[in-house]
Image (cartoon, rainbow over all chains, first blue to last red; front, top):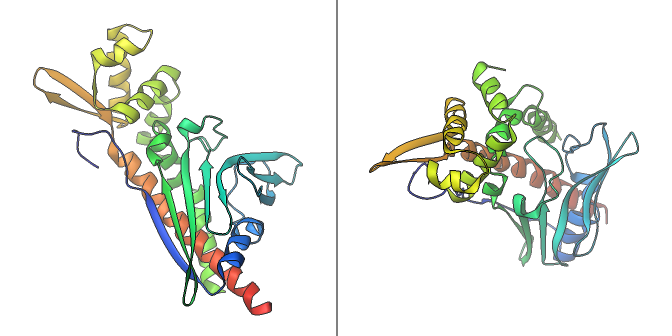
Amino acid sequence: MTSMTGSTVPASVKKSVTVRADVKKAFRVFTEDYDSWWPRSHHIGKSPMKKAIIEAKAGGRCYTEQEDGTECDWGQVLVWEPPRRLVIAWQITHEWGYQPDLAQSSEVEIRFTPVDSGTRVDLEHRHLERHGAGATAMRTAIDSEGGWGSLLQLFATRANQD
Amino acid sequence: MNTYQNAQFAALGDATRRAILARLAEEGPLAVGELANEFPVSRPAISQHLRVLKSAHLVIDRARGTRRLYAVNPDAIADLHKYFERFWTQALRAFKKKVEQDAKEA
């Protein structure tokens, strides 16, 4: 990745988690009940987030409803294959605004696989390089005091306490 | 916010520089001439923009034979990667907690 010989293409972010629930249930909580677990600090609206929604269909909107009554799109369902697979376009610019151009958006694929103990959920966030020019500015926003980074820390602390 | 970050914001405040950076992120490393062919600005203007981007640590360069090639500073993308690593770890932890809480209640 630090080489000058090729273009700057970062590896995907890959994460897995195994949950004690069947595939149908895991998929449903991830999508239909998305509002119940999505970190409240994660939205790009101008006022606090009221509700987070993923529309259950290919081409469906991913958006949040804000307390001031506005709606904020941040993504789009690219693949809707319940209960096994879901791909979402991550349409957020480095200025935490909505990115209408899919060619400049990254993608998150989530796969649900039955295992003995329940369901393994494999998540891959790829094509991060499409955020291209914004990457450094995004880092600045992330690292700055009061940015998502510190909110995430607060969330992590709370989640760990429960 | 330190001066390094201020320089980055200033560098990104220009639409042509943002476009140059986006182009380098897609196709880099590229030489000045290759960039000049794609933008409606002169080659010296491209060079000037690259100097600003370089001084803000957004772009790195290296001599390749007689040419000088420019690329996006990979540290920027690496940090974006790190950020999402951390973000998804937390989000999936919250998801797991919710699924298993529901399963218990059912």
